[in-house]
Image 1: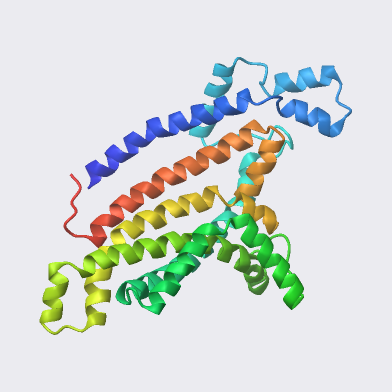
Image 2 (image 1 turned 180 degrees about the vertical axis):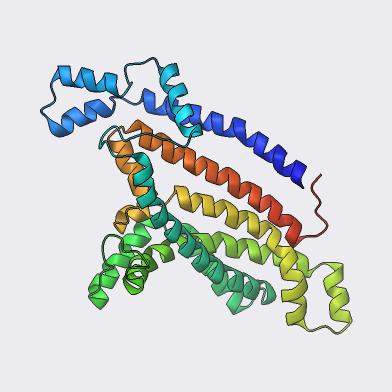
Length: 316
């Protein structure tokens, strides 16, 4: 197991390097730069001040030197400062990461809590009304765009119930109820899409497992159907589901841009969008690499979870 983990960690190095080159290159081919956006925003920056600022921020260096300097900052866990605001990137991330993590965690809990029972119900009641209802919910979750569903929920809540979720972000330590109000709707919007794909995978894999010989043998021996499903069949059926959920967690961390913008949550997605608009290279590059590192770690954890779900799996 330890040899397998070391190999996966070594393979992660070229993946992260390639990701860093891609994000660094894409930002440089975009028209304009951070100082151009800053000059347009302030309107009173002289060309001399702009040249001095460009030199202070090392934006006048060749691209390869800028890249090597940035890679060294990432290796030493010192991402530097924002070009546009001048704030330390570590401070901005310290404020944004808890928001996105809480939103992603609540969405995962909501999605899994909805998907697995519906998937089991659909598989055990195949081609019955409850199966059709579960499949309809799954197809709806895959079909509804996040921006449309989020806007619809806010509009209907305001019109029908005269209620709007509190804007901004309040820590759960300060006011648990206000925090739940702020995250309840966006987590449900994100969790619905996760539950759709997870529910379909749970249904299909459980149907396959229920047709295995050992399930028929257990039924012939007189074991109860509920015991067979939840103690034997479901655990084996969850292996592909773990892959889906693990990949979705990384997607949630990287793809909360729209939902955080609609519900005014100051998380990683909103921070990245603002940085892209102002060509804030260090912030965008740091955020992308943070997401890339998270995805690599999650993929490794998902692979290691397989051995717990299926003892037949051994890593060499």
